[in-house]
Image (cartoon, rainbow, N blue to C red):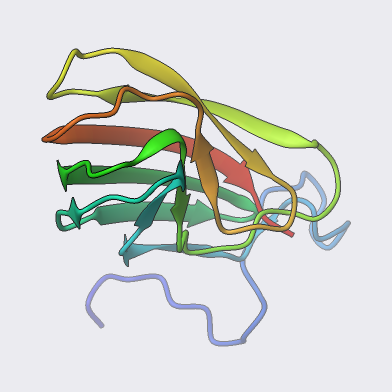
Length: 146
């Protein structure tokens, strides 16, 4: 009635195969988007003040794209790497050992760094990002879920 295409049966989707009903690998039956609140924890020391962290995601089938902003107001004794947790979906527990993406710090020096994600976790690790008061980390990554 409002122009949307609504599937009346749970677990069904749009079949992109040339021959209908040939398998589930060509059926789009899972799409969602939303927000989440990531957490940030240094692997050594601790942050004194973390600002409001924001995250956005889009999930299509078994692929998740997540964008995050992590502001560190007061660094404290934080150093090493940074674990960013509370991602909206757990990474797949089979297949690739790690997912590699990149991040950028935009307030201190504008440098980029690598991020990794292991199997069966909801955490991304920033490898050796710059630390300091007022740091602003931007992450954009894609990972596969089970």
